Length: 162
Image (cartoon, rainbow, N blue to C red; front, side, top):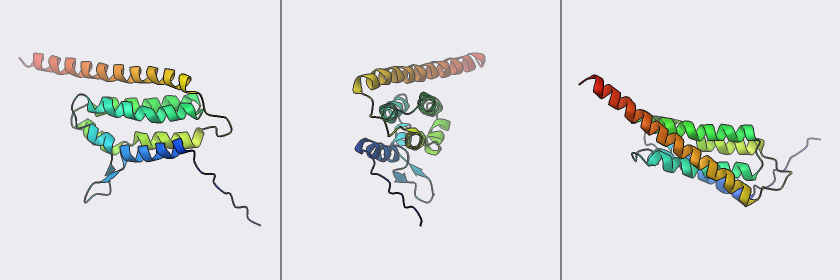
């Protein structure tokens, strides 16, 4: 006799994270192509602040991972996904193409589903927000450092051609 497994319904916050990841990475179809884009790629078109805004929004998924006790190594992978998207996304034109192709929010939600610990109760809000503030500060510093490095590189290039 075959065993039938019944999948338990998702907690409301995880269902919301899945919908959010779709909004950020795959909400809109590009006409004539089989590629989908989301709010993250659209925000990337706003110079200077779009990629930081996308990174801050993407941090919500990392908060969900912290809440559902995803192991640290996978949370670090999620932070790296957001950091790479933020750094590469800040490069003009190349970053916009990268934002369309790289789906870090969908990937990060899948990491939660694969590695969460449903047997343990979710973490409390204070611990989550403390870590989240540190992650947000790291991502903002990383983005600002990238902009500074790009500015210096352009300055050096322009200075060499004078």
